[in-house]
Length: 375
Image (cartoon, rainbow, N blue to C red; front, top):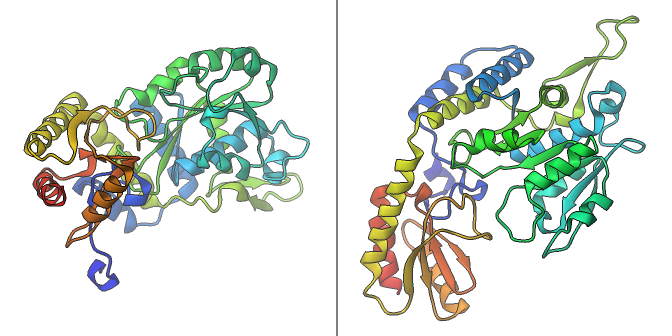
């Protein structure tokens, strides 16, 4: 079918990004999805049981499977704004008169925080693009806090954010969409005190690209499920127990039965991986590429651990090629895209980066060969 569509495969040296298709699904994941595709299921019941299963697996209070991390942001913001009040749930995203303001640090502003606004949230920006002062943060206090996990200097750290928010009785939503590995991050931010933590299911977990996870406090995660795509709410059981309304907030964020079982299977496999050994293998592969390219003279070549500004995760080493000018780097990127199999890489100014995360080991030689010719 790909050939009929004219859509050829690429070598993905960027990482497990949405724009490159997420991850490759394992045989076990595909088999589980195929099994689910052959039966009908009660979707509200499946969601509830799947959430309980994941929560037990991870040792967290509650879990809900979404159609991606961005959907998780919308549902989590809605849950924090409405707190389960049915009348408020039915009004979302028309949230006038509700506690709908969400604090976002200036250094955390990004294209994804617009998803909070889809829930009817009003973003209150604190600090600037260089620093957030604790006194500013305290003075701006409103209804919900949104925190993006990253290593930037100047950000008010999550520990302080949680402590101050909880002093005010305000929940903290932590966006950790691509913060795996390490696998410990699945529970780390909840142990720190975050009320809701959101992960992508289609990145390093290697579930379907259109899946995500909401983990956190049961009372809030339960509201996320009620707001979700398969939820029905009784309007007035005294008058007519069959008169119900679909909660439309999450309806466009539909998760299929195949997505749900696929993500759980991928997560099960993910927890069984020795991630330390996996990172060591990535290091050896990058070091081998550095050695193979060391004799060329048009670029400085080294292994690096990526700083902020790279596609996540930052815990996987990269091959860095530093060229003389940004123009030379852009020419190298364009050259790698040409050929029978395009190679996609990341580029910042005069540097080009190769991430081994989504590159098959046998493709390393293809990348090195193409780089040698172009350099």
